Image (cartoon, rainbow, N blue to C red):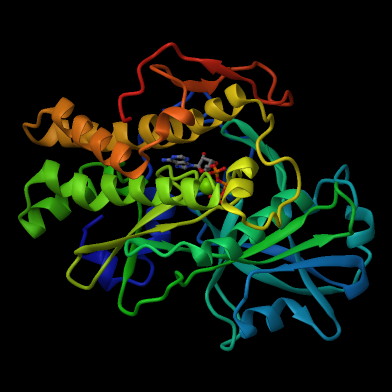
Length: 408
Ligand SMILES: Nc1ncnc2c1ncn2[C@@H]1O[C@H](COP(=O)(O)OP(=O)(O)OP(=O)(O)O)[C@@H](O)[C@H]1O
Ligand SMILES: [Mg+2]
């Protein structure tokens, strides 16, 4: 893809989500795997597919809100019932619990959508004029990458609660796509449903454009000879590659991550699929936009900061000091360092002469300045990963990689 298309072509974001991810999913043995049917995968050639929708009675659903725009709320939560979309592959699966009852409700018009890079979050291609652009994140209980992609009450409740909480994180280079509305069918713990993510970053600034971070370094499936967007950007802006990437990508991501963790106990999973670089009309990077807030929360950190606890569940899976450290390491060292920063550095190395150790040392510096008491939260001199369990149904177990974390 040509970099200029980012600002010239309204379809560019969707194109990057779907086709500029070549070579990016090698960070684990599961990363490139999916059980989703090929036509629903981002890289399919189908321009769109349709979500099945029903009109669900108000008293049969739970509604969660993070200040959705009124037009969005009215589109889904109506006087006569709630517009409840279901992924077509799930609709066709009779074994899905609750579906028998849902399919008995009156059908509404289908929603034309296209998948984004995560497969289970789709972009609505059509909607009423009063309703802003949005993505819909769906219950899609098939294995995509490492996990079975269920979207149950706790995932939905917490995604919306974190979206609300992030309004308090004020940082010049931080913005986010809020999961502004969440709906589950039913009220029990097992109930499932969907999230609606507004496409407009908060806080909103006009004339800005988004590039999913993986598309900065990944290949273009449809144009195998295209130069990575990051390399095109460096040439166009005539900047020094290493300092540009440190300043515009690594530093804001590390600083925002540390601020969210330290100030609010929220461990943003700022990997390359959950972050988007926001550029202005001249393709100059301005902010990093974050998405996907079904994340771990360090409840102890929030307690210490005197913050409210609007979340379901125990936050982290375990609450011993050691387990908390493992989670901090998993999210920062593995998701951000290994799954994202390593890839950016590799592209730099393959196009320019750079000293990668100097780059990492500068990022480590930024990390320690942003997180001065990191030693209390992270394991010393090692990092954690998921154990590569053969069975995806087992709860993920973390294991010590016995490897120096090179980005902290
Ligand atoms: N470069 C990438 N890095 C990480 N994940 C990627 C990348 N490209 C695509 N993905 C896909 O994105 C998903 C990442 O999982 P994650 O849990 O962050 O997202 P999600 O919760 O499914 O959806 P969303 O981010 O839309 O809320 C996986 O399905 C993975 O295959
Ligand atoms: Mg994600």
